Length: 283
Image (cartoon, rainbow, N blue to C red; front, side, top):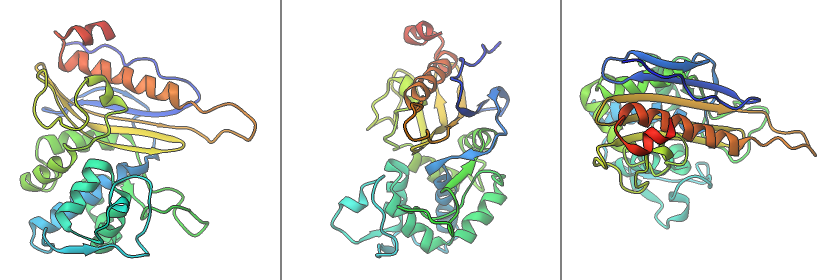
């Protein structure tokens, strides 16, 4: 089956894009797939893998209570910072990271698991170029890593395909991580083209199922995941990064970037669900 070319992507933005057949891991399309870019919250994927690994090996109890501290505190993405409870079990913190990319839960988990352990796991699963560099910070100083995480689409699409096939460390670990990611509520980027309920899409809807992880900062939009349709299952990674505009100049491309990401989503939908009228119209 021939695969059409990817949609045209806007200029003045650095793109890293890769799409693979998730069942046989065959590359289907790419654009600068090996280009390493800042990926915002995408690096939390490896944190979830390490949490699932420690749970599976018995070194971490999913019911262990984790308490937030002043050192962990960060607002923005997530829910825990808006909740009154200071303590959550490990499994609930992981669920918050998967569902709403919770920054506070990320920091508490990372303190418990250790960045070194997360980095070792990134190497074990072939994510040497795509990893978590630091905890989430409201302000980054000269002594901190310049960004939360980095990655490239080649690594991330391959990771998603392997997670789909239950090959990340073990079938049980892969299943656990997938279950956390399946509840992600952010379908604003590539996955916005699939027309699914952003708050409930763990079951097939019009024959389609998606799980994904997104990352957002002022100069990055990233979406990686797996979409399954009647025709095929696709692993994708789409990362867009750009420079901050100089003072007094126009140059925020986020509207164009989001439009192009949804165009890639419609392209994916046309492959996964080729008989769907909405997908045909998007071609």
